[in-house]
Length: 266
Image (cartoon, rainbow, N blue to C red; front, side, top):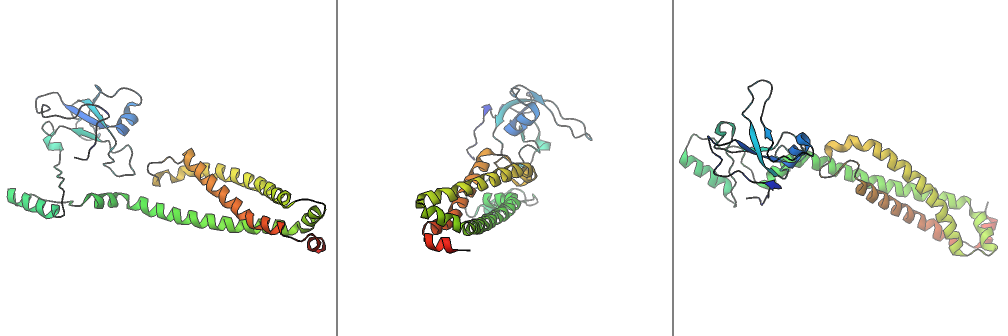
C-alpha cells in the first residue's frame, strides 16, 4: 500500500498459515544490528522477554527497509519483525489504512456495523502520525537552526570588528606601502593573507571541538550521522564564506585610503 519493496527474499503470503513453517520478515536495521554482515535469509529467530516462555522459532524469509515503526528517531529497536497473522493471531493487532477525507468516519461506521462493541482507537492521518512521532526532532532541529543562524551572525559581526580593528592598527603600514608603490591589489592580498591564517586556525579548532561534542547530539539527529563529513564540510564552507565576506569591507576601505592621510595617522 505504501509502495515499500523488499530488499531481499519474499513477503509473507497466503500460504503462510497455521500448521506451516513459521516465517518472519525483518527490517534492515534489525538484520544489521543482530546479524551483522551475515546473510539473514534462512536464519531463525524467536522472541523472549525473560519473563514469559520464548516463542516458537521463525525462519526469516525476507528483509524490508526500516519503516521506523517505533518512531522516526529509533533506527534499530524495538525490533521490526513482521509475522504471518494466521500463524500468530494472538500476538497481532489489526491496523486499517484508508484513503479519503472522510476515512475516519467511514472506518468507525464500518466497524460499528460489524461489531458495535469493537474499539476503534488511534485514528489519525499519516501526516498527524508523522507529526506526533517527529515533534521533538522538529523542536530541537528548529532550535538548533535558530541558534546556528544567530551564531553565524555573531561570528560575522565579531570577525568584521576584529578585522576592522586590525586594519586600523596598520594604517601607517598601509600608507607606507601605498606611498612606496604598492598597488591596491597588493594591500587586499596582504589583508586577506592575514585573515586566512586567522580563519584557518579558528576553523580547525572549531571543527575538532565540534567533532568531540557531536556525539551528544546523536539522539536528536535523524537520517544523518553526528560525524557526517558532508555536514562538517558544508558548515566549514559556510563559515569560511561568511568570514571572507566579513573581511571584504575593511579591505576595500584600506584600498581607498589616501597615503598622505595614512602617514599622518596616529
